Structure formats: structure tokens, C-alpha cells
Length: 302
Image 1 (cartoon, rainbow, N blue to C red):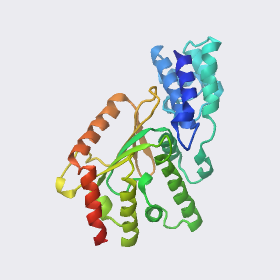
Image 2 (cartoon, rainbow, N blue to C red; image 1 turned 30 degrees about the vertical axis):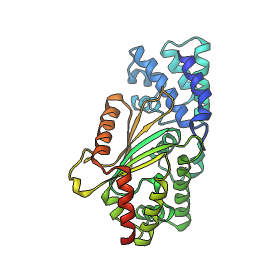
Image 3 (cartoon, helix red, strand yellow; image 1 turned 180 degrees about the horizontal axis):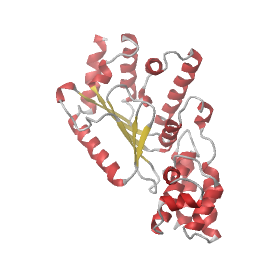
């Protein structure tokens, strides 16, 4: 079972990612999922697993979620603890740990990225479908460069222009996931406040609306507007994203960003709850066609 899962993942990985082939993030998640399954099947607590590799239960949790890199020695020790002693079963998992430690394309931007967001970029690169709700800004994958610069400036107003340039480049590079043979499917619901707020002024917002119209002409991009007149709605708690992966072994991941950290949820009950919320939002919001008409009417007023 372990061998079949890992071999399937390794043979499929080149077809998963589009421009970012061989993502270490998806490999870490696959390995973490396998280690969690082995641990729970043996009835071993995270505390006991952590003790076996001289780490905390929190470290085991992060390993199982694929949020941190693996030491091959730790994987070997955990496999022994979980009763996987056959070398034919151990070898592919240890090799997976070795491959999962390779740096992603975003590694050169590591000085700009907090660890919690670096995890998200890896997940984004591995996902096949992302559904997102945004209540303040246009989703990053749909931001026009001038709009992206204005949004980035809000959080980095004293940052040198050279660094802002790199941050904009990082964001636009992520957008390549929306093109190519294995393009990401993006389905976004945005609050009306998103298109009423102009972080860079009217000219920048006009360019952003035009960009949204251009992007929603693509088959893999859907945008729905949640008008003010709909009143309260299912996502009153704030923005979130749900990431789904092409490899069936990977669970859906719910991502919620905060000012200095992020929350990742991957338990089926949690992701199912958020998926139900997203489904209700999609029903309450304007249809994609009506959203395009709304944006077209909005342009002359900017």
C-alpha cells in the first residue's frame, strides 16, 4: 500500500504542477499524510512520536501537515516506531523525504517570505483547484501589477522600491499557474467592497477591473461578486481559500491568512464545512455573467 501510493505520487508529480514541476510542498504533504496514517493505525500519540525523534508533538503535527522539511533520520526513526521495518517499504518513503527537501522556485525570494506564507505558495503551486472568498482586495492571483504594487505598499510603506519590485515580481510569477497545459482552476467570490476600494487610485483600479474582465474570459477563471444589497452572508467570518489537489491521497486544505500568521485546516470535517460555506456564497452572489456585466458598467465611473 505504501509503495503503491508513493510510486504513484512520484510518477505523477511532473504532471501536477504546470510551471513549477517537482514541488517539494506536494511531496512533503504526501509523506506527511503517509506518516500520519501509519501513526494512527498503530495508536501512537504525537507526543510519543515526537519523543522518538527528540522533538515536540507540535513538530510531529507540522511534519504530518507537510509544513516543514523532513530529516531523513527522523523519517527512518518514525518508520521503525510505526513498525515499518521492511527495507522495500521504507526505501520509497525515505527517498520521498530526500526529494521533498529540494528548494521550490520561490526559494530565491526566501528573504521576503515568512515561513507560514512560503507554505502557502508551495500549496498553491501544487493545487489543481482553488476556491476563494475575498472581502478586501482582489485575490493575489488576479491582481494587475500596478494594483499589486499599491496593495503591497500598504503593508510595506517604508520598504525600498527595489524590494517592492521583487515582491510584485513574486506575485506575478505565481500567476503563471493560471496558464499552460495544467492550468490551475480558480473560482473566486469577491465582496463588492473589493471593487469599490481603490488602493492605488482610480487609474489603477480601472486597469485592475479591465484585468479582471480579461482574466474571467478564460475558461479556468470564475469570479462572482457579492453585492452589498445581499446583506449578511455565509462568510461573515472573513476571507478564506480552499485548495484541492490532483493527487487523491492529498486532503483539501483550508487557508486563512492573518496579519502575522496563517491557519491551515486539513481535517475532512473542517474542509467540508468551509466547502459548504463556499457553495452557499456562490449561490448568494451574482452569477459570473452578471458579475462581468457589473464590472463593465463600473468602468466608466472610475
